[in-house]
Image 1 (cartoon, rainbow over the protein chains, first blue to last red):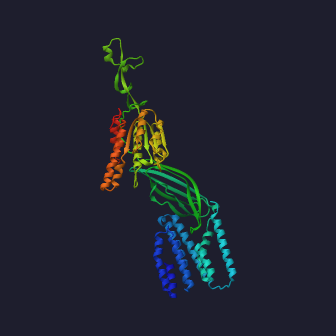
Image 2: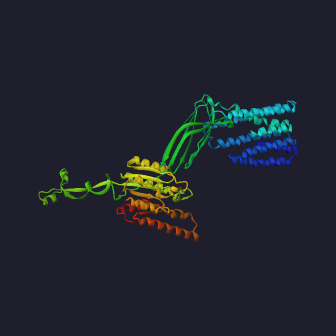
Image 3: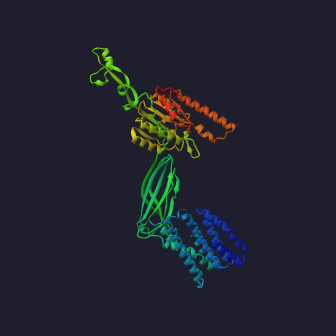
Length: 155
Length: 419
């Protein structure tokens, strides 16, 4: 809901009412995703929300609303999946502890990321395009290596 | 995380810094998950599965308890999941659980299932160890062998005093038409040295001077019984959750229990895709073997070359045994019963009525009624063909109790008279 409100507010302030309407129309989709988390609907909702944020930023909407909107969509996606995983048997103490650790980690992720974004927007660094390209390639390569290592670990 | 990578690429293409910042929550999500992923070398888990079987009102319920313990020094976030096996119907609890276990802590996953019958076995417990966000999961298989056998439901029949043509020379309850020690008077013969004095017929001896006579009593022996359960595809009928074969299993189990309880020697053959056999035996152990076979019995998945009873190896049954065949009968089965008679087996056919079983689900229009009538005639002819071989036939409508039909058929079958 916060994600959709952020996106709708961003579009509304910039005067793009169609975008705001689309953002509000996403509410039933998220509701359906919550009802059927086993389907690919939560991921589709996340993708559409992030897509809306990207389009909004590209057409000139306020970056703060769009960034907060996409971060909140990530949190919503995670919470929908968490709710489906532990929702039926959250009465046990070990499950409650897992839920609480999960929420702490999510809060840490969002807190750190948003803090970094707020601080980062005050820093203005001009990088040549080739450096950016190489940095991106390096990040993608590193992520791929780390992911591959994790998946290939012995059981 | 593909979304994050995609965002990064879009940011680069559009050379938009805000889009690059937008990827940060996604990258942070991934990084936190990676940093908190446990080192599998240091993860040590103990697992135990406890099975408890209870029977209430005839239906069996199995309670499965999974006990997981974290033996590693660090907390572990894990996801444990059980898979429902075919035939299981989960009645209570959940098959999966997320849990965070501190060092030395344990958790319990409990669920209950019911099943008509079957063998259920487990070789391991599947656990996924993950980061707290559940993003990076590593599967672990914790070895744990467990097995539970759900035996078919039986209805305890009262003892039926059967009169087979042949008996096994072992003390039992069936009058064997042989004079010996027993309870019922059988006849009088001349005294042989060694006969106990208390069996002397004093009245007859008094009438014949210089001769002694001994009273004989009828020896009581046990019967040799062979049960054949038909598990062929073409004789099975399934409507919704109900299966005609299950009624056959129930009848076989009940008959085996009754005959073994009476002390007879019973053997079993389940004739289907995989033949299951319990060779002749007595007592509780034999009942256990038979129940084990019946709990594993399955209807053949397809009509194979072995779909004819002619291929049934009847020689595994002792000669002159009383053979009870439980089959809804296919059109080609007459020759098998002829063979049974040719091998001098005494036989009885219990045939669950397929038409009566299916009738409630059929619409009552004129065409259907005609078809049902034709099928009934065909079945009647088929049963008559078997009865003409002097084999008693029980046309069993499965919603009717089997015991009175069995009692009538078995008590009249001494001379192979037709029903």
